[in-house]
Image (cartoon, rainbow, N blue to C red; front, side):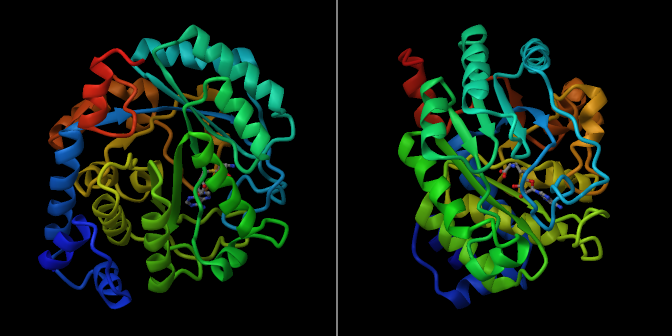
Length: 355
Ligand code: SAH
């Protein structure tokens, strides 16, 4: 086992059988988590970066079968934030110590190219020391170019699954696997720090699909990877499927850290939702980012991707003091910096005043 993790960390290619063994976890998992933690410390020390997550709209024209805000869910109470509300979230976030704002939403027809361009420009102008991340789904390349030009630093677009036939079981036919992949490649080419990712334990996912996800990460080399357990939402076609497990999710986080030593990997809200210690365990398995909720309190319950989604306490921006404490107890330290891709190298480069 330690031979395999050493080889993975050294960038050696693994066979399908070797991947299957690592993913299925029939060994002492603590050894894997320790190795992932060691690699994370080489590049990022004990730093944990915080991102203020602003959920700007839950209107969505897509119909992902797993997602609570899919367009066919007539029971979802819809909302969208005004420009002013988004700016107020950023002001509050800055005051609390956030230096990255993530604007996430459903694919809302109201989010025109120009509206988002204007919002990003304003946030960057008011907060020149902050990074802006967008997570607004699939768009034309020209939109991504314009938003990057306006100052957007990063873009999160999970690939969801790297297996075409599996993708087609999680999405309606109008949502194309090739289109999702096209978007990811465009984002990287344009110069974003690009984020991919997947759910663990989504319906019809087996070990083979997870092997494909790992091989995709190896090939695509994203800067960020979001990994969380699938959690059913009661008003979706997947209501009766069971959630992904803590153990399998931690294994995938650790394997991702070994595969992409410098990646920014969040201990996701979904991980914190399925287990009270999920976030801390994620950090100890190689994650180095947390994304507390900075949306206006009155809409937080409505951005309901899955049942019981945590949005209070340490998952909330106001809970930052408590979050800092529990991160410290886990052996790490919340830092108030942009937390760009690159770890130690990048920090040294930044001292030369390049930003
Ligand atoms: N519209 C944006 C944001 C989607 S929501 C986009 O397309 O990228 C962010 C992520 O939440 C999704 O990429 C998906 O991986 C995750 N998600 C959605 N429903 C979920 C569920 N039921 N359980 C766990 N994660 C879910």
